[in-house]
Length: 174
Image (cartoon, rainbow, N blue to C red; front, top):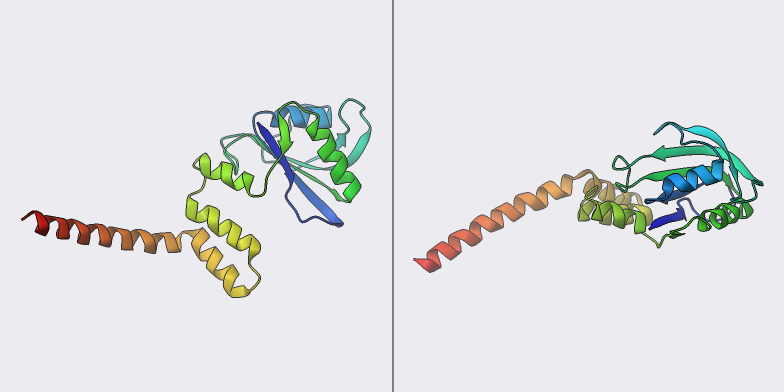
């Protein structure tokens, strides 16, 4: 299954990013641009057209990330378009016409990244914490967890607890 969603905040803005991830990402790119795949990880200016009509939706930047070297571990693309509701709706409508494509559920890109071993559970949770952080302290804590500093502490404590547990079990046996 291929998923897509608005990755930036909803509402009117100068730029909006629509992310697509899954097996049919290449097909989505080809159908929206009527051209071959761009160079991987290189921002490319493209015209995005409605599928089956070739009516221009918008002109913007396309980033193509072949799997497994992407955030999710799958083929992934980002369409940087103007942030009007009409443009976003036209992009979503066109992507939905590609077979096996559906709108992503909240957090699904991160869930797929976790399932594909691209991030661990602590990092997945810290991404959610960072997105919802409202204070500087919350942001700093989420960054600490995301960077792995908290993970090192947890692993150190886990190793200590395992040693203590094995000593206790050995004493019980004797």
